[in-house]
Each structure stands twice: as structure tokens, then as C-alpha cells.
Image 1 (cartoon, helix red, strand yellow):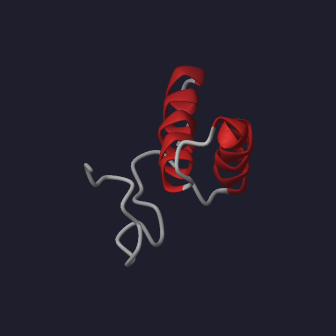
Image 2 (cartoon, rainbow, N blue to C red):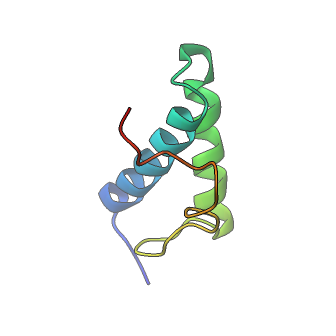
Length: 66
């Protein structure tokens, strides 16, 4: 499946935010989380429309409001 650049950035951005929230929204970790999301996307571990492995794992509260 071919996706647009906008879709690519949207998927990476969403995953980067999940990773960054998991790390406590530390400003010095924002770029590292972005880079990891890009790596996941480019390696095929993060793809459009597919749920991330471990997203429902215990301890993953990226979608939990505090």
C-alpha cells in the first residue's frame, strides 16, 4: 500500500507522541521518540492502519487520562 507524505507524517507523529507520553513528556526525549517512530515506520513495524504490537500490554497507558 502506498501512502502520501501527509499520511506518513501523521502516523509517525501519532506514534512519536505515544512514545513521548510513555516517557513522561520529557522535553529532552521528544526528538529521540520521533526518531524511534520514524525507525519503526521505515522498518515496517509501524504501518498505516495497523495496531502497534504491545499497545494493549500492561503498563502501556499512552491512551489513559490522568
